[in-house]
Image (cartoon, rainbow, N blue to C red):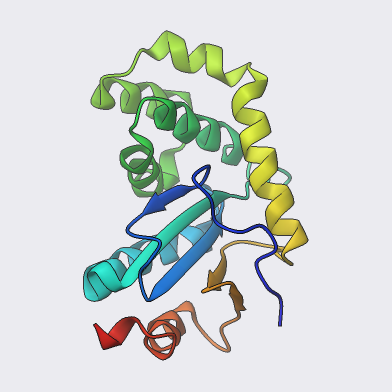
Length: 177
């Protein structure tokens, strides 16, 4: 079984408390249809387990098959610079079927962020380096596709469906709160 080789740190996007019974690390691609399906599942898990579950998101855009994955990740990272990562993250997954420049510009308006700043961010290395760091950490941890999950540092591999995350999270201790 693969282990998470790059520990969660303050550099990550974290929703919840790292002292929670279960820390769920997700490697995902905003254009991946399977990631879109697990997005709603993860939201349900967060509601169900509350403070017993901490979510950590790491970018893993599959640029060869998803041309909007990298621009979407850059959009989310730009929003993160302004303290609005999770709002952008959620909006990008909800708009997954329409990803593109128009969606990104509309998202900037909704979040109250300057569109010209996003245009500049698309050409800057800062966000690309952040995304590349996430990709490299995923590859070192054994991620080959998306979505990829680690539960308390151990790779989660479903037998049939990602719905199995629920039972795995209970087994890891989140249901005991």
